[in-house]
Length: 140
Image 1 (cartoon, one colour):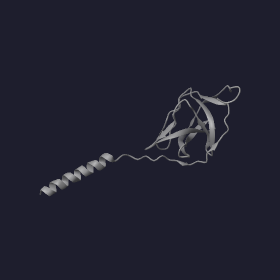
Image 2 (cartoon, one colour):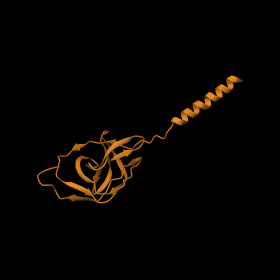
Image 3 (tube, helix red, strand yellow):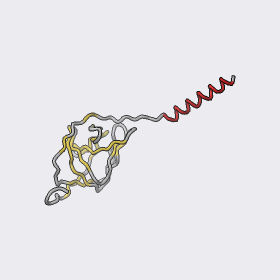
Image 4 (cartoon, helix red, strand yellow):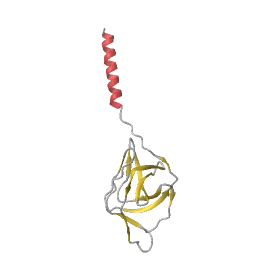
């Protein structure tokens, strides 16, 4: 009888411990990307409006109005741009450093820097970038 009570208590404690450790695992939809760096230019674009980009699974950092962007690379899905004005991430069960990918004036997804992969926007989001007057004498 006493063994039965301890067995039940042990079972309940074990079940609670397992349930307490369980969490929803959300896998980020991503595919390998062949990244090609581009030569630095003095072209800088300014984001004209705040922009929230949805992705198929997970969440992306909203892009802030007034941030400045440069093209840093290219993948088959489009041009990879980067800013120094904010940290851009994509989140699922993990957090990934990300750069927006632009094609035909839309953010079509994000290039995941460390993973060297691409996660698509769902749906692609129109982006309003204005070319800033080029800086004379090179890049900054």
